[in-house]
Length: 522
Ligand SMILES: *Cc1c(COP(=O)(O)O)cnc(C)c1O
Image (tube, rainbow, N blue to C red):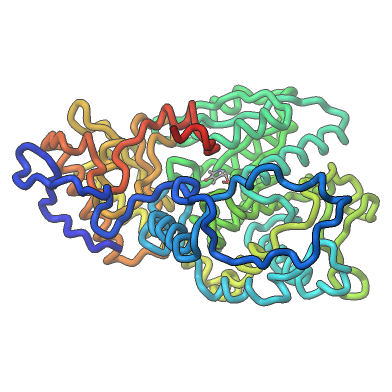
């Protein structure tokens, strides 16, 4: 952590009343944080990090037509220039190894180094999906052991290990539901989704060919059971419910919801991305869940961010287990674990809906997740959930006098604390607090999500932050809330100390420039 002193912080940079005016540097750099051009802008023709000998033999005339007419459009840099470029870029990359990453719903927890060590063992790191099974029995055994743990921790009948992420797992679960309905000869086409759901839920339901209908939330931020029951009928394939939900609250009526949905002939999909709040304490299988994805890259500490890789195994009830996708691992009569690749592999799995991926699973993620589980044990995992919830409640109660907590009165939260900008003076918004947090040396929290709360700020500390670390974060948040209350206009232009100020986020989303073109340089 930066160790920013948060007491009475005031930006001094070029602010009229701030006193000192900071000069612009000639280089554009700020102290040792250096401006970094694109590597193409740095490179010059003819420069190279390595010297190649001229080819010993003349190129065969048969290949002559392939000779380049122009030099390849690659940037020319010396070795130190190339090394410095990437090192400078790496220093601009904020990550969980630099400081807290309080993004609600993302569970950015510490990735234990022991997991990394295990994942780098050559027997796991170097396996190839096309290797003969006999040569990867240990790796298959790891997948099987992890699968056993996931089944035990969730109280479910079976698990599909191959989905590559949470959203991919959602799709897998809905395709299992679709296959089960097909087997029953029914064409139910509606999936009910609460309005507080993660955006991936309605997107997945639509992608899987279902119609999405929204269930409203109660004023306490939970699923409105009566409204849900009113929507149940012969056209409803199932519900997708996140528990704990995206307001950071447990859905206490989950069992009643599941019973009602089952009675109406539907299935219950649970978005298990927030399993880290209940692992070891609650088994979704006991609540009537039929399918639930588990984000190994959240609950079980495998790294994420930057788009992957993740892993989203889907635990399944007895009712859906037969439809799980290929391939999967199973212990054969010989006592060895096999990878089952083909249809018609006998009892229980006779009706796979197809496959989600070409090859089985994410070996690196499986190895890390199993290392995490084994190093914690069942007791340790329970403590993980308890500490994650404790930390979030500490943040909730330490900030609710300066920031509005819309569900603060509903009792304790689970693993994340939800605030809004409702109590701030006119014109001071969640965005100002988030940008101010960058100046304080913290990655911003999740903003404007969940959508049910206007100006939402969702903070998930995870169990891996210490009390002193949380206290520093809380002090910074209190300072920002105070500055907003005092209508400190400098907050509107934060961040002041980051390499970039406020970006045009709308333009970045609508008109992204993703490819560098030489002629755009002029
Ligand atoms: C993270 C998350 C997802 C999606 O998981 P990915 O692995 O990012 O695809 C779905 N639902 C909730 C509630 C989440 O927090």
